[in-house]
Each structure stands twice: as structure tokens, then as C-alpha cells.
Image (cartoon, rainbow, N blue to C red; front, top):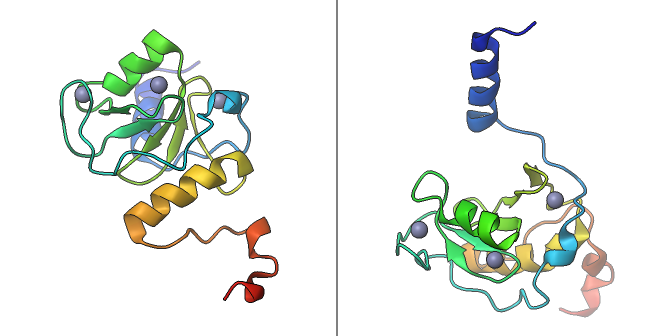
Length: 141
Ligand SMILES: [Zn+2]
Ligand SMILES: [Zn+2]
Ligand SMILES: [Zn+2]
């Protein structure tokens, strides 16, 4: 049996440590069809205008603040059912329905939007381990 201490340890560990990301997600059908045009990474929360470390809803492209600020992304998920969100602070993608981070490298449907935000944040494309587009790249330069 697990003590209260064990449970607290578990919760705390999940919040602060590295949690293994899922390599599949059943909710990718809710991705917006146009993720090439997204708000800039310093966009404020559309509800409270908090201006840092916001999340982008990958279904409707709303920018909303994190659970550590005013929980507007979480509220948005509860109201709309939109479950895929991208963090502007570290570009990680969270699925509220899976309650897990998603492995951007492994899930090819996430590559296009990840490329866009990576370009916005770092000025270059992300180094995908498995990239279809890298084949024959010598011809483009
Ligand atoms: Zn999911
Ligand atoms: Zn907010
Ligand atoms: Zn949304």
C-alpha cells in the first residue's frame, strides 16, 4: 500500500522531473489544418494578457497562459475540449486528454508546427532525427 508521502512524492516528481513523452496520441485529428501561420512566441494570453511562457492551442491557435499563471489554457481545454497545446517557453507539446507530453520527434503530424515555432524561436529548423525532407537535400542548396 502507498502512504500519503509516496503519493506526494509521485506528484512532485511528475511536476519537476523529466516525464517520458508519449510517441502516439489519439487526438491529432484536432490539430488545426493551418499551423504554418501562428502567433509570435511573445504573444500575450488572449484572456489576461500575461505575456510570458504562454501556450498555443493547436486546434484554434489561441494563446493562453499556463497552469502556473491563471490556468487559461487549462480552462480553455475544459470549455472547448481542445487538448493539444504547445509551450512557447520550451516548445514542448502537451496533450490534456492523454495527460502527457508528446514526443515531437516520433509523431510526424507534429513536425510541421514544430518546425514553424522552432524557426520563430531559434531562427533555424529543428534537427529531426528521422526526417523525410532531408532526403535529397543536396539538390536544394
Ligand atoms: Zn492525446
Ligand atoms: Zn491568462
Ligand atoms: Zn483551442
